[in-house]
Image (cartoon, rainbow, N blue to C red; front, top):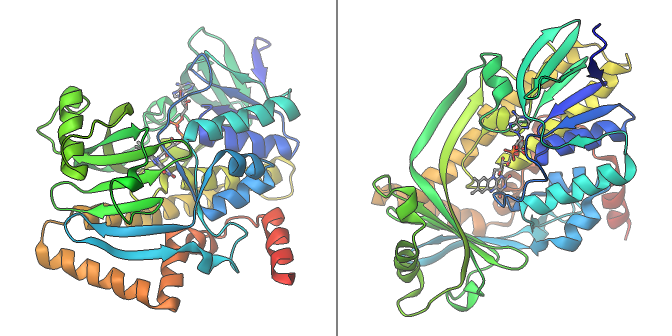
Length: 414
Ligand SMILES: Cc1cc2nc3c(=O)[nH]c(=O)nc-3n(C[C@H](O)[C@H](O)[C@H](O)COP(=O)(O)OP(=O)(O)OC[C@H]3O[C@@H](n4cnc5c(N)ncnc54)[C@H](O)[C@@H]3O)c2cc1C
């Protein structure tokens, strides 16, 4: 092996939320990990803000759940609403208190999760450096592992490389792996508003999905602000969508004229549903957005990326130690691809199309169904087990979150 390249047990490409989850889980198991990140410092992107119960259980096993809870906002309920007629259904996650120690959604900005992981890695595993300013430009399977090349020509080698380099993954492209799916016509304009929106839109709770054939939206409370996620039609360009005049016009439709809301940030995102053709190529493994991207409706994209990383770390560790055959990594790749296509794609697409449904009969049928589910305790619980991803992780055998089981056991004994 050439002496000029650095070596580790695992190299993680991308220090986003999924890459850092993988790095922390692998380091916790005693593997020697390095993380290569192209940005000069930790990302401050907001994007995701919803963390579901199984993800918090993973956080507990990784020793970060306490800090997540401290910085986040607990959302005990969520609503489905119609823009014209108001509330359709409300779900209270406390019905899940015998299923998880975290019967709620935690609202926490993605960049804060990244900071929490980064700090824990730095404090506990100084041998797992996050190398900032390292843009990976190439990858190849070689010498029984995989080698990555960085923009400055330096090379890293490991028996396994985890590609967590996001939706535009260079690694996925380098390996020629397809990324099939769809891009919706509408985009989302995400506004961060420093005003208590519940004073302007009566009756809303912390998380609200609002259906409308022309202007469906999401209203979310996050720790210090409110987020309004508005659908933007294709004919409106991104510059126009973020212009103060357009933002004011769209907000006026929601809350009426004459109120000038303090908008702290406005960003437009295209909305996709895409899944990589394979999650494994030789010794390179795709996780998170590099492997699948989803509509933010339902808040499952990042959560399932974290589940990819946690599931992978468990089996990769056992494989590296010789406790499990390498084929368990193939099983992981098949399992997580199945989750991405059959669960996450399906559910987030369903929610997105239901919110935007233009056929009056279809819209009313959906609303009647949701109202019926919410009114029936057993059906409502079943629905919340799906919406909070608990059923999904049970169906697909996510490794046991030991610490969370212990906490739930203690709750059960009380
Ligand atoms: C508006 C919006 C709201 C959302 N809300 C939610 C939500 O509430 N819940 C949810 O679960 N999901 C949500 N999502 C999805 C979520 O944001 C993504 O799934 C998440 O960011 C994926 O994390 P990741 O680490 O895989 O990728 P990323 O966050 O994209 O991180 C990839 C990292 O890799 C680095 N990188 C890229 N290329 C290279 C390279 N060549 N070399 C080295 N480093 C590289 C990048 O700089 C970045 O730091 C939302 C998305 C959007 C757009």
